[in-house]
Length: 78
Image 1 (spheres, rainbow, N blue to C red):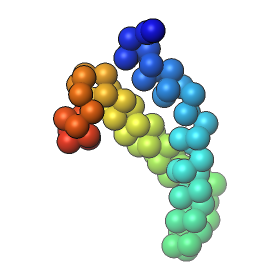
Image 2 (image 1 turned 45 degrees about the vertical axis):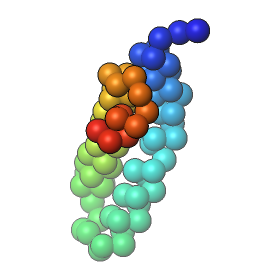
Image 3 (image 1 turned 45 degrees about the horizontal axis):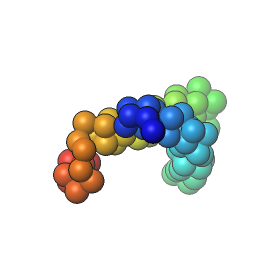
């Protein structure tokens, strides 16, 4: 019905909120569990890096899905 690029872009946008939950939970556990000096600036900087890395990884996975037509080679590249 529509091309793979539209499908993966729509899927990326629709999963955006869910992709934010994982880094937030991970940083909350890691930041306070490791006993890092409690500083709002350091916390939000670490959170921002974590969210960016997560979204970049998801976008790269979807990009490989657009480039490669078959499922098995795409999984191998990812």
